[in-house]
Length: 50
Image (cartoon, rainbow, N blue to C red; front, side):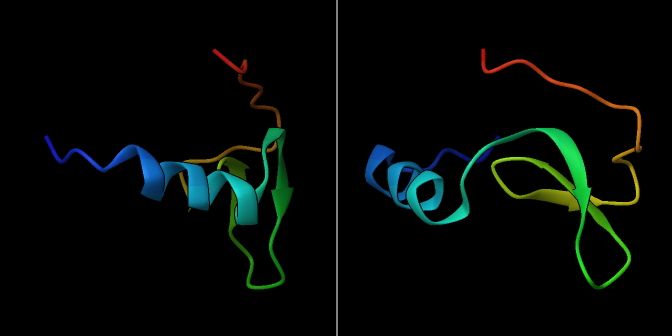
């Protein structure tokens, strides 16, 4: 398992933002959470902040 320094995670969260429901990038794939993109993200998914 890869671990990331907390400063890096804070930086990603600041610039990417949080989306609890998926949204579509212009490039076909969907994104959810803090920038998780891929074909495994479905339109009807929903996540919690926890």
